[in-house]
Length: 141
Image (cartoon, rainbow, N blue to C red; front, side):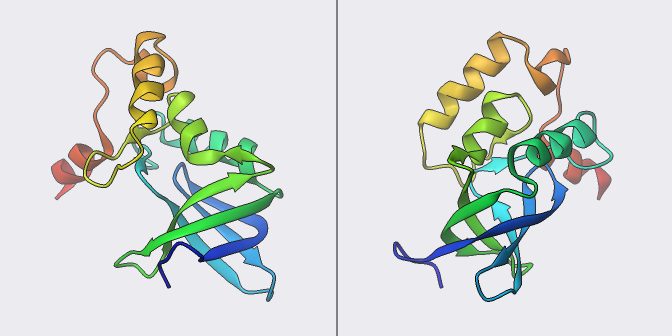
C-alpha cells in the first residue's frame, strides 16, 4: 500500500492520542492512522492529554488527506496528515506537542520546528527535562 500515489481522503472521526487518529474514508471504512516522523507523549506521560487535545483541535471532524508512507506492525497506516489544509505532523511539533521521531524522520524541516518550540519553551518543552516517549516506554518495560 505504501507508495507515492497512495492517498486516503476522509473525515477524522476519532483522536486516540497526540499522533494517532481515525479517518472515515470515502468508502465509509474507518482507517487508523499514525502520524509519520513524530512521536507524541503517551497518554499517562506529562503532556499526553494536552497533545491529544491539540491533535483534536487540528483534525477532529475535519477533512483529512493522508499521504501514505507505510503500514506499521499494529496494521496502522503511517502517513503525513493534512487536516483542513494544515500539516498536522508539523503543527504538533511546532506546538511542542510531539517530538521529531529521529528513528524515522526524513523531513529535516521538522527539526527546525522542534528547535523553535524548544527555545520558546512551548508545550512539552516547558518542562525542565522532558522525557521522549520512546524513552518513557522503555522505562515502563
